[in-house]
Image (cartoon, rainbow, N blue to C red):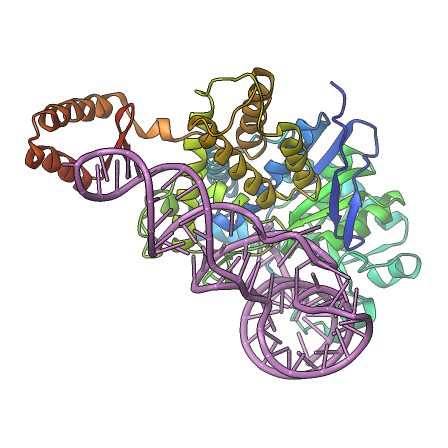
Length: 491
RNA sequence: GGUUCCAUGGCCGAGUGGCUAGGCAGCGCUCUGCAAAAGCGUCUACAUCGGUUCGAAUCCGAUUGGAACCUCCA
């Protein structure tokens, strides 16, 4: 399959503007996305980032690119700070719960996968773990050490930012400069080993309290915060690859350090396009594990939280997220979600209707132009909100066709139906959940009541027919009287 | 404190130097025994104050308010 003729442009954080997307290797895309640190349940903010990149992955594939999507699992634990007695999150959690660190890792990795599956995310092609690449991390640390861009202090290896900055630009991604950083870095305890506060650890000596540690040329220790991503992206995508993604919050220092490590080790700019997704906020503040301002997916699905009136289907939530651009901040609220859910149902109803429409002799609607607009939206840095506005236009046309106010030829109708389905299900990754609402048994019961109500209505027994309708409504079943008979929906 | 970003109609949320995004709610209509649902139509906004321009919500400056990063976080 050849690449669809397209003008995909992406917003590249590195240059601060949109650029035409041209992969390093023709027809192939290497994409690395920073995955979660698995020390607690994944929250919706995390999910947003991975859902956004899932959409990007899907669209790149749709365009015909052969994509290798790598997303890591951070299971080695990042240090809480750079102090000597620093304890990483995974060890800390393990100590609290009296569990093996890898037990924690396993538990939350499974949770992470489950949640993303519910959101209909495709799995990445490779999902490497930090603990599975200790050898490679030691090797890269040694390479950087050999090149003189890192130094050893008491069993720990630190990256020499100042020295690196002489021939490179530390801060190119986040727009910082090193002087500013030096004058503005807060003073933290236990940084006496480092030459300069902005230096960061490639390898840290393990203290006796550390549960996770490995043997290295410098003694027992564990890898630094940023090394795993440099190592694993290089290993699976090469020294230079196309897309590196992650949340905005990782821009600095994490991604900045990744660039520095890769350039120091390989002498090349590792990434062509840096893509950063914006935060999901709750009450106007960013969701964050450490501050506790979070909403967990199971609370969202069940509605078991004071924040929500009811539970929401993962696909409706995904639609809610797709209605905002991935680079915009999105605030999570009950009202916004309810509004989105209704729109989502409308979209699904329209799609169901569309597949039952009949072709006519002539077309009153220009499908090709519509389709082009859809692609233009997606090609413009994956603008899903605009795409969705076009999808609603399509739904309007579908209704018009149904009312005989518009028509499409067989060829146009097929293209229309296929394109709409492909955008909604294949690219946006939504699911048709209307069907899921109607379990066989329930619909059997309700159909019986609908028939009884019809008999009552035929006998003009309005009291009974209204009672059936209203009682059903009370238990959350909405009857819908239409020309072709009565259907129902479950709220 | 430093750096960066944002402020859009009742709500959510795109866009952007002249060409009414879209969704939800509201209102009107169609349908209906009455409703509901559904569909159709409609409501025309861009924080404040200056400036640039034939023209600014869109560019520039200031002000106010908010956010992110600077410390682990998607």
